[in-house]
Length: 137
Ligand code: SF4
Ligand code: SF4
Image 1 (tube, rainbow, N blue to C red):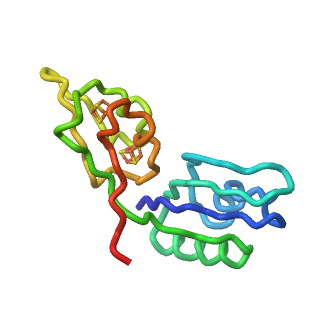
Image 2 (image 1 turned 60 degrees about the horizontal axis):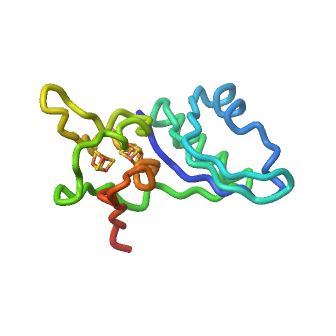
């Protein structure tokens, strides 16, 4: 299964080879969707983790023991059909195939099951048709 999480790195953990350790010790593939980490500073990384459900649980516990903060997806992506003009720009930045322009009409289709909530499509839309709807807390 796949799981999208946001990792918050404290300064001490920035140099850790997280993706390597996840692969070798937990058989988890970590695909980095977005990263903002400067040397010797704290940082944030959005990753898609793929693997067995038990391995994922063990990997997440290990990440927390390393001092990293974990956040699961905090909401869902919503497309406003009144604003969308089916230009397809968002589908070109979507890493999971959740957004696709489908022939013959090339109308945009959104598959929420495939969405990783990486939020890359939100700034990509020139018509501000895409938004993150936050889960109730
Ligand atoms: S980028 Fe915006 S307007 Fe273009 S297809 Fe995507 S949601 Fe629609
Ligand atoms: S948030 Fe947008 S870009 Fe990211 S997976 Fe979902 S639809 Fe694709």
